[in-house]
Every structure is written in structure tokens, then in C-alpha cells.
Length: 269
Image (cartoon, rainbow, N blue to C red; front, side, top):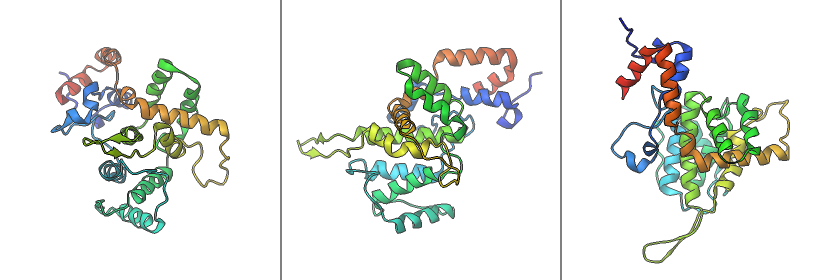
């Protein structure tokens, strides 16, 4: 009889890769407003949502307290307080970020964490392929970026998605707006381009920061990084939604090679 597949460890490496690509959501599931009451989150990883606690909590804190903060990510922070927060997270403590924490300290902590990851959020072996998309335009650029995103390890993919969703929110509050009573609500001035300038070098790294043989980044690479990260921020919803055509194509291949996996996927829905 057919083998029952109940965990990712039961599957071959190749099948695991396919499963990662198949753990898909419909486009509407990317909209947090439609997901209220649902615990399921979009992930290219079929088993669990893998986002470091420090990233998620920093994002949530700024989403709650800092979207209207002018110059968020550009205004200085307290090095002492940032270091203290970082040590608490490093020790595995359940760090609670509330309104008493400075938004600028939390913003600096998030940037530092991404900068100092042992392997950058977009792995260094994908640095050149991602950078090459900067010279592309339109649908071809987005299609290539999406295929490259599918190559990310699950934890990198999940964390990048969480970060881009957050940065997109920050960018939506860049311009000043009017409140319900006509009062002006100041914008934070951090457009997608400004955010890409700040976060690009932390997300897309050619060399590990501080390495002895690290080469100073040239202007062309710096400009290309900004273009690529800006596209990721602006189009993250599209990029993290796999088309029905691609889903069908993968399912057809699986049906021919690993029908047990389809049974596994159907039972997870």
C-alpha cells in the first residue's frame, strides 16, 4: 500500500525542496486584515513559521509605536540601551518591548541583528544573482526575483517575508496625511527607496562584516542593492505568492514521481 508521510523527515531531500515550494497561500492570505482569527501564516516552509523572536518583536514594536516616527532608522539611538536589549535576547530571555522602549533603540537593534547574522538574510552565494536583477525591468525582473526567493532556506525566506511586510508598512506611512478631524499626521519620511538604502547593505552582503579580506563595496554594487531591495519591499506580496500555474506544474510532477507527498499535502489543508 501507499506509504503515509507524516513529517518532513520521512521525505527525501529533493521532495523536501518541492514541499517547501508547495507550501503556498492564496494571495488573500497575505493580507493580515483577512487573516484575523487564523493562526496559519504564509510560509514557504511546510512545517513551521521560522522567524527569530528578536526580528518579530522589533517589527511589532515599531508597527505599534513607531510608524509615525520621523526619520525612523536614521535617527541615532542609545548604544548602551541597544547593547542591553541585544544581550537579553542573546541570553534567550523573554524580552518584552513596550511603549517605554525608544523606537529608535528598537530600530537600531533590528538593523544590528540583520547586519551581524552569521549568514546574511539573503545568503552570500546568492549575492551576485540577486544583484544581477537590478539591470532588469518589469515582469522579467519580478519573475527572476521570485525564482531566487524560492532558493532561500525556509528560515531565511520566512524572516525576509516578515521583514519586507514590515518595511512595506513603514513605507506606507512615509508621507504626511490628514486625520479624521483634518489635523496633519506627519509622515516618517522613510520611503521604500530610503528603507532600501538603510537596509540593503544589511540584507544583501557580499562579504561578512569585519572580515579581513572584505573588499570595499563599489558604487555600482551599492546602487544595485538599493534597487533590488526597493523592488522586494514594493512587490513582496506578489513575489511571495506562487502562481496557480506553477503550483499545478509542481503537483503534476509530484503525481508522477511522489504521489505520497500529494496525500501528505492534502491532509495538511
